[in-house]
Image 1 (cartoon, rainbow, N blue to C red):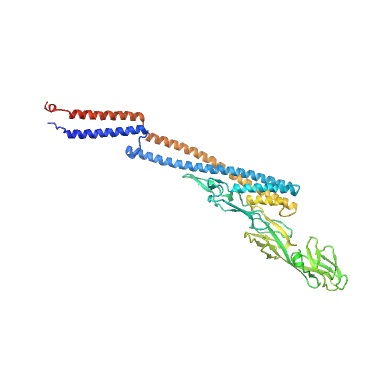
Image 2 (tube, rainbow, N blue to C red; image 1 turned 90 degrees about the horizontal axis):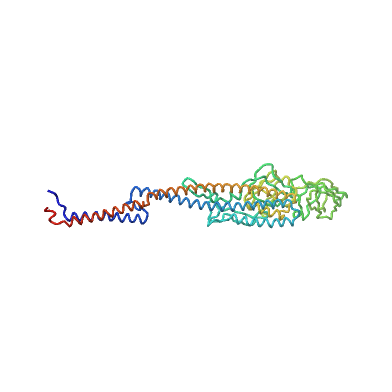
Length: 485
C-alpha cells in the first residue's frame, strides 16, 4: 500500500520551493543589475573573508599614497626654495667679491643696499610654508622656525633665533619606510665649523697661544684706560685729565718717561714718552700731553719735579675691558684670561700682556654664523661699520665669502639628498599603484558578477520556479478517479 501525500504537504512543499527559487531569482537579478556578486558574508563566507582582506590592504595602500603625495609636495617645494636659496648665496658671494675689489665707499654702499635686499628675501625663505606647515621647522612645523631681531649689543650682528624642532620631521610612506620631509632649519642654514678667533686690534691685545672660545658671530671689545701712575722719586704726577684722556696701557715696565731737569732746580727741562722725541717742559705745566712712537698718550703734571732729577720713570696703568659697552671688568696682566660675554654667556680668551693702549677692538669668530648672520656681516662690512683699515676689512670680506661658499655647499648637499628622496618616492609611488591595480583586479574577480553565467542561472531558476508551480497545480487538480483507477 502506497502512502498518499496530503494536500497540506503538497502545498507546504510548493510554497517552500517557490520561495527558494524566488529568492534566488531576486539575488541573481540584483547581482546582474549591480555587477556585484559578493556583497555580504552570506553571499560566500570564504570569498567575503578574502575580499575583506583585500579591501584592508587597498585602504592601507591608499593611505600610503596620500602620505607619498604629501611628502612629494613638501620635498618639491623645499627643493624649489633651496634652489632659490643657493641662487641668493651665489649673489651674496658675488657682492662680497666685488666689495673686496671695490675702489671706494660709494660703490660699497651700493653693494650693501643690494646685500640687504638679499637678507630680507632670505628671511622670508627661511619661514616658507606648504599648506599650514613650515618647511624648515622640523618636528615643530606649526610655528615660524625663525625669529629675527636687531643686534643684541653694540658691534654685534642682527640676531636670528631658531625655534623649530631639533630633528627632521618624517613621513611614514609604508610600514617599513619613513622619509625626511620637513627639515630642521638649523641643520640647513647653519653649520658648526669654528675657526680661530680673529681680532682687528687697536689696543694691541692679542689671542693666547692655547684655548677655545665659545662666543659666536662678532663683538666689539672696548678697552678703557682708568689710571696712570709713575714710579716715585721724580716728582712727576698724572694730570687731572689723565684718567679720562690717557690712552697708555700695559703691564709694569712696558711704558716709561725719560725726564731731564736741564735747569737743575726743577723748573724746566725735557721729557719723552717711550723713547719719542723729547719735548720741553717747565714747572707751570700741569697738563702736558706726551705722545709715544705708537700713538699712546699721557697727560702729566710737571709742577713738582724734584730739582736736579734726570732719568727713566716707570709707568704703571689700570683699565677695564667690556664686551657689551656696559659691563666692565678690570684688566689683569696675563698671557691668557677668559672674558665672559654678559649678552650670550659665551667666553673669549685674550692675552693682555700685549696690550699697549686703550681703544676699540673688533672680535670675529669665523665659522660660527648662520646664513642670516653671515649676510648681515656682509652688509655691515660693505658699509664700513667696523671702521677698521681697508686691509682688515678686505680680510673680513674674504672670510665672509668663504663662509657663504661653505653654507652654499651645505645647502647644495641637502638639495641633492632631497632630490634623491623624491626619486625614491617616485619609485615607491609606482609600486604602490601597481599593487593597488593587482589587488583591485583580484577583488573584482572575486566580487564582480559573471553576467553571462548569472543570466543562465537566472533563467534556470525561473524555469524551476515555473516547473514547481506547474507540477503543484497538476497534483492539486487530481480527482477521486485518479485514486480509484
